[in-house]
Image 1 (cartoon, helix red, strand yellow):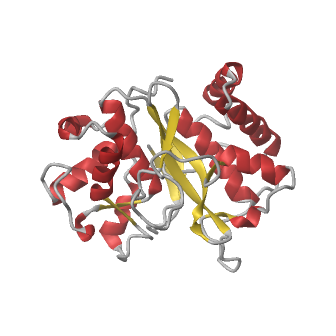
Image 2: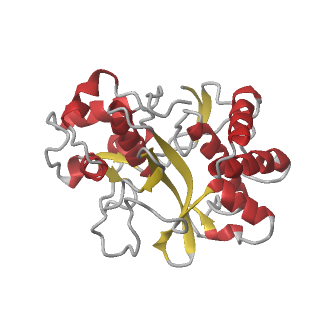
Length: 289
């Protein structure tokens, strides 16, 4: 796909004009994005009710609409943390990607796991990549480059701090990685263990969907996704993981094959209907997107 073009998820819609005033420097754009959003778990404020439900905004147009209804000013005008739109890493990345695409810069989201949030655990995470004319540059738009916690440049990330879901899955399948060290929550006593093999597999499918322009929520579920590996088509996941890793390494044949597979395989293609398991609560149910 052409990553310089908006998808239905990244399209700012009637609010596209808000991006016209953004700076040209990508790190400055990321700073504006951090001014718009606050993480629902890591932002230091506990949100409930309608405010927590903002995490279910699938569309950049909806995120911008909520911001403008609440703040009504240019995007770079400082917002108090409590007035920012509640979201997660996927939302920081998607708004950032949307802004770059608005400027004609190819950009895409990357699904995987970061080792720079907690000692000994790899949290699920979404970062961005943009094409600088020579190479894809990985940037964590959610994180401030001036944050002293990071020993690497979050605006031009090296390999290591972030690992794609496909790479993690292949390492898990080869017995080289402990799946329980990858997920959203390391708690082994939680009612639903948000880590382990099933979780990693789900994120491989998110990675594939995002790379094909379906930049879905991290709690959308469809096709062959499952909260267990029992009966799951792990061989299919092996295949798409191998192809995505090869694609990342420049294999154009693998790129075409895995993208064609996403569009044609009934268990992979997102067809507009999701089983939503939102952290905002409420009954888990099928929704039409």
